[in-house]
Length: 145
Image 1 (tube, rainbow, N blue to C red):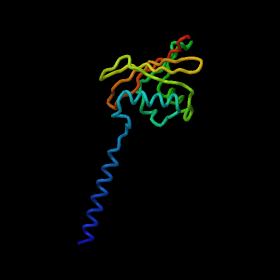
Image 2 (cartoon, helix red, strand yellow):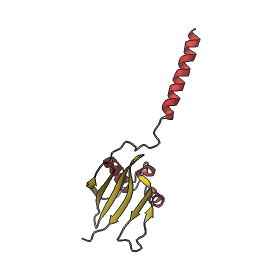
Image 3 (cartoon, rainbow, N blue to C red):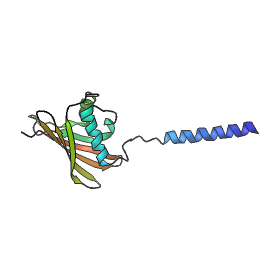
Image 4 (cartoon, rainbow, N blue to C red):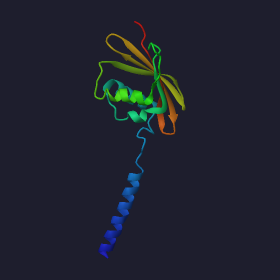
C-alpha cells in the first residue's frame, strides 16, 4: 500500500511539474508596461544588455535617421545584430525619456541621450501587440548645438 501511494504521488508530481514547465512564457516581456520596454531599450543601447533584444521589437520594425545622408531604413534583424555587437559596452551618456503621446494602443516616447560633445534624440513608437508592448519604429535625430 505504501508503495502504491508513493507511486501515485510521484506520478501526480511529475504530471504537475510537466504542466508548469509547459506553461512557461515564450514572451518574457508580454505583461510589461511601455515604461519597462523603454527602460530595457535604453539598457540595451547604453549598457550593452542584450538578453531581451529579440522580444523588444515588432517584426516590421524600422530604424531611421533623417540626418543620415542615404536615409535608408534599418530593419529589425540588422538593428538587433548591431545591438548584439555592442554587448557589454557601457557608454558614457546621460539618458532620459518623456512620453510625447501615451494611450492604450500606441505611444510615442522621446529618448534623449546626452554625450560629452553631442546629443541624440530618438522618437520611439511603441505598440501594444498580442505579445505585449513592442517597439515598432525609431527615428534618431542629432540636433545641432
